[in-house]
Image 1: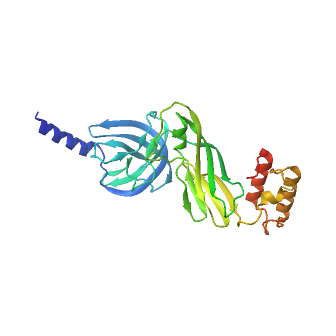
Image 2: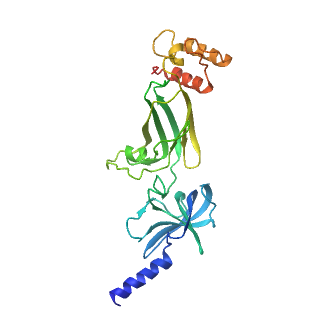
Image 3: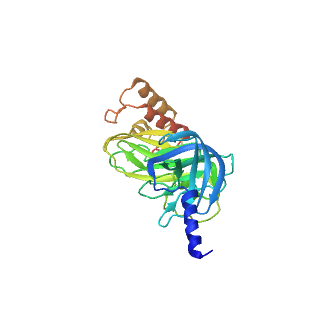
Length: 298
């Protein structure tokens, strides 16, 4: 068989066996399911996955989808992450581009930065076990450079801190809301391969100076909102609730001071020295947290 004929036959096999991504794209699809079998042929490879729950995106045309992990498409095609630990009958999380053809539909991990800010993947579940969200300073004003600090404990152990941190997306602002997802992977992440296992991912996000008002931070996991924090930015020149309640000036909220704070919160009376601020539900939780942990007022 001549080399030219062999190349032609390989091209035909690629067209007939491996799904192509030139068909109609119906958006991104995110779902959980069960991996049935891994298949590969000349020009492509894919998992067959039974769809259990669609988290976002269109309802697929079938409850059994091919999740294409690779084809021999010419560069600069980039491919998302296919977890090498997946075995048949494992529960998996899938995030990719949903494509329909005359013959059916499938999901592809073929990725580009223009399509999505984060890499596509098929992987064993990465679930959020615990979350801590806090702002620095704890009682910010319009004069402060504000930072958002997230510490997330995952169900899966990663080989080092960098990989765990990479599960937390960049922060996205939508009006008075800041959004972070705990399942995305940065496409440009570069990790030093030092084996230091951890389940904890940490990131600090600079928010800069914000106008006076109330803001919300939401951490989303693969299925929805995992944790939510509300914080208030006071007008500069006003004394914060924490400072106003710290009567003995020891930079902490002590027992008598938290009792006084709860009194103001129940009655919804303005706290003296704060320019008329009242203690909201979110603020009393913040004060209780400072009191329980004995942390200094920032």
